[in-house]
Length: 311
Image (tube, rainbow, N blue to C red; front, side, top):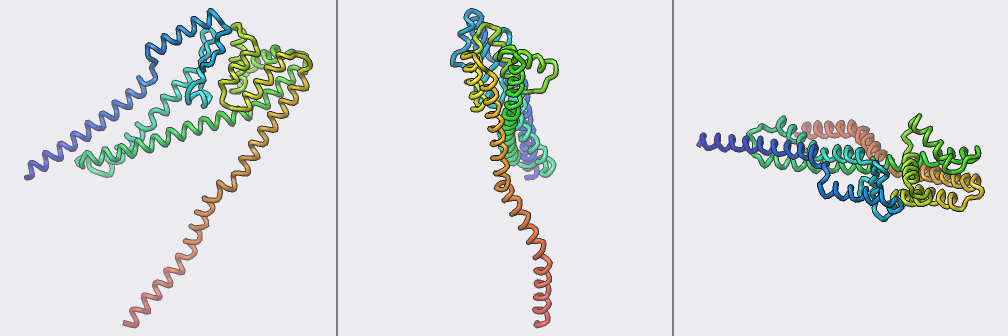
């Protein structure tokens, strides 16, 4: 009987080790091989580059992939809404957050080995790993939402500043393209990580590759999911196409973007009291419990003494 029990325990320990090794192998595969492109995807990209080089104006199709010379900008999928339209940044971010569920499962297994002996049934390890996977998945989705929120806030913050720089360039006597070229040159010399200037840099690269400036603005603008950026790019395209006096329209557009950003901040400030309600409720509940604990203990002790005296 004891031999059968020991064999069962050793079998459970072996299955647990095999399960952990499988988790580690899956995590390694996720990190090293999941970001690789398939052969069909590489062939499609090469064909798209060849068509774009033959007909630059055909770059502005309905797809979300832009080829500008040797550079490639992908606005498609969920990563495009996170501001990750450069392949290197996209692959690095997706690879990093893709590891979160596996890290959650492995950390849960480590904690299980610290609390429960390794000879415990393998079902306990599987259950703990599933819980770790679920927690890692929730952390991954939270990281995506955080990245999207940070990118959108950064865009809304930099949009009025970029428009002011364009207005100052036009007021100095430059046309729209020349003012934008000067701003982008300053950005290359002193990087500020401005996402609006990065998008405008893509527009300038499309323009230099042969696509008209107005069409380049529209093509990049329609691939960005933020409404204010689309609005600004559309107005810039109209201003460049119509010509004439540019200072006043650009000044009004700059004021509109600044007002939009101010309204966004005021809306977030108005939501703060609602977000603080639950923490304040928990805080006051804890204070009330702390205040009434001592009197309740005294009442309980007095009741116990009185009942013992009566006996």
